[in-house]
Image (cartoon, rainbow, N blue to C red; front, side, top):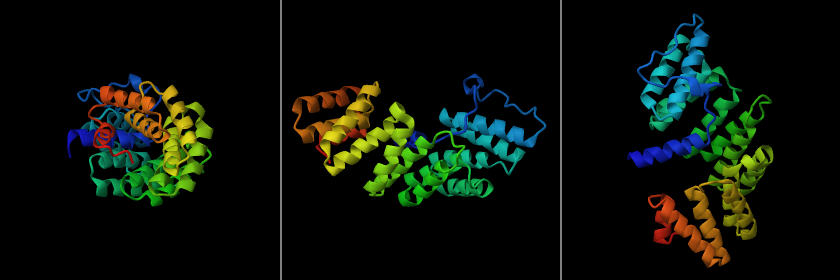
Length: 266
């Protein structure tokens, strides 16, 4: 797999995840040469610390050290479910899909109602061709009253329902994500704008994508590409040209700009 494709996969994976990161994580030394904290005599406490470090290395793109930390966590406490979940994310990024599946299944056996584990496994399924199966895990995360970010799981359910062709379900989930997170629901608004574009309700798609562009600086390539296609369908050639110029200047190597060059507007 090329570095570019691997990087895009990593960003796509992170977009839908709730990775375990401790409060004050910015103060933790992420130098791989540094000694990991091992002073605690409590196996569960050691597992938690090393899982949090593994999650931070994962977010930083250092997969080898992330795996080391997660293996230390599981050596400390083999029943600590979050360690399996985060290791599943790392293995998914490395395209070790069988190992990732095993880790997620182990995590769910240990903590079947954990909302973060359910959300992460749902996203793993959605990214690997099992969009319809993924929805149940997002809904399981949402129903936990202690889940701090149900809007994220709703947004994920909406994106995956849309991939599965369930527009009615996708709209319901995305609206819920927007209702819960308000102005912060940029990914959900992009997906809802895309849904309306596909339906042909262009004025609503136009309204939603404009909200995204006003809140996002700089605009992402997928938002610009969608805005360009909406303006094209509406016949607004000047606006279409403006978005094409932004794609060309900001993201000339992006998939979206390559589609533009090919004329693949649908």
